[in-house]
Amino acid sequence: MLKLTQTDYDALRTHGEETYPHECCGILLGHAGEGNEVVEIMRAGNTRTDSAHNRYHIAPQELIAAQRTGRKKGLDIVGFYHSHPDHPAQWSTTDFAEAHWYGCSYVITAIAQGKAEVTNAFLLRGTGEESKHFEDQQIQVER
Image 1 (tube, rainbow, N blue to C red):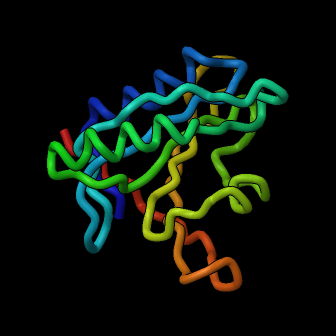
Image 2: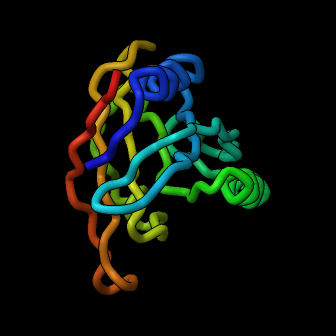
């Protein structure tokens, strides 16, 4: 299960609306355990210039900055989020190929004509490329 506050849930969905028709992306900081508990979300810039409408990339510098921020606060990177403009909130073959943070949640929001619709989460499991797979993950929004 992925736990996050209503404020953070709304913020990542709003981020997708703001960047439409391009994909947004960001980093989820929090605590890992039975599920992942999000304490803070960090917006990231989508550095994909060739196909930002259907791909995203977070610069390594932003990942390092997020890790440093997390360490100072006693938090870990527990996941990532991005949007799918005018496509379902389901991981793509590219999303799967580029996912390498085992135990992390990957959150996808479908943005239809500029409005956030469905938001789904997937937990990356496995121990390497041969065994990695996504599992559907329930989202618990806490008020």
